[in-house]
Image (cartoon, rainbow, N blue to C red; front, side, top):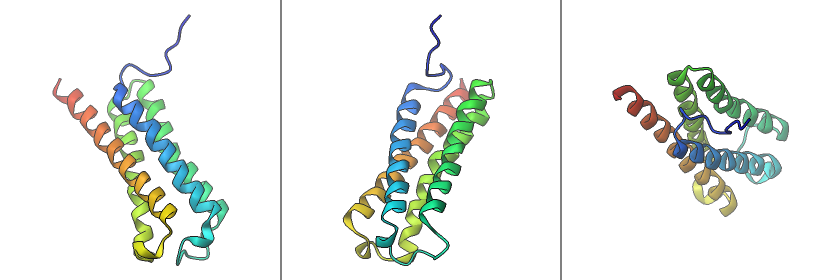
Length: 135
């Protein structure tokens, strides 16, 4: 018996956006964790380990969205996926600690990759939810 990996109630573009955001998020958090010394003005309580724990917490929103959507709670699933994508905006908080010019090029690229991918996922999920509500 063939079991599809993607759920039919989640639009294919949203699946692609989730994959891109997953990669962007992991890239930014891993860069944050492994090169924590080059991120200016980070509070002392933020360590390599806390960064990875934070990434797991953020990612759990996306996983929860997939699970509840698979269980038939499509609107809640879309909202959780939207929240997962919106978490990508938290990368902008780096700029409250230091100017863009104070970060390395790699740091800026990982921040903006996550921000743009997360925003696209949040918007794509919102659009999917809206289309289902008017259908």
